[in-house]
Amino acid sequence: MAPSSCSLVYNPPPFTSDKTSTTTILTLRNAGLNLHQPHPLSCSILSSKLISVKPSLIPVRASHPQRYVYPNPIPEFAEAETRKFKNELFKKLSKDRDKFGDDLDAVIDVCVEVFNNFLHNEYGGPGTLLVEPFTDMFVALKEKQLPGAPVAARASLLWAQNHVDHDWEVWHSNSP
Image (cartoon, rainbow, N blue to C red):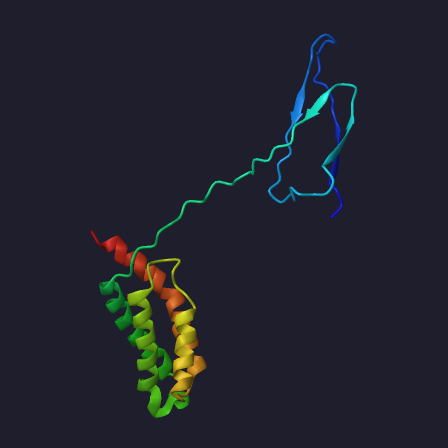
C-alpha cells in the first residue's frame, strides 16, 4: 500500500498582527486508516506560518442508533387475523376454482396453518411482516403436491401486505 499524503494550505485569519502567535492543530482521524503502514503519513505545508500536525489514534465512533424493540406477538390478534385471512383467502382463491379443483380446502388449510404459526410466533407489529412464511407456504404446498402453490402463496402475501400492519394498528388503537 502506498503511503498516504496530504497538502495543507494555511491562510491566517484576518486582522492578526505579526506579533500575534497563531497555532493551528490538524487532527487526522480515519477509522479506515491502516495504522501499521510502512511509511508515516506525510504532509506538505505551504505557509510561512507554523502549523503543527498532531496525529490521533483515538477512533471516531458514531453514536449507536436507538434500538426499537418490537412487541411480542399477541395471541388474540393472531386468532382474529387468522380468521380474517382464511375468509379472505377463500374468497380470492374460489374465483379460480379450476386451478385448485377439489383441493381448494386443503390449499387454504396449509396457507392458514403457516400464517397462523407466523402470527403467533413472530409477528410483533408493523415492520415485522416477513416474506419467509409465504415462501414456506409455497414450499409446503409443493411438498404436498397441491395445485396452485404459486397463486396461493402470492395471494396470501399480497393480502398480508395490504392488511396485517393496518389491522395491527387498529387493534392497538382499540385496546386500553
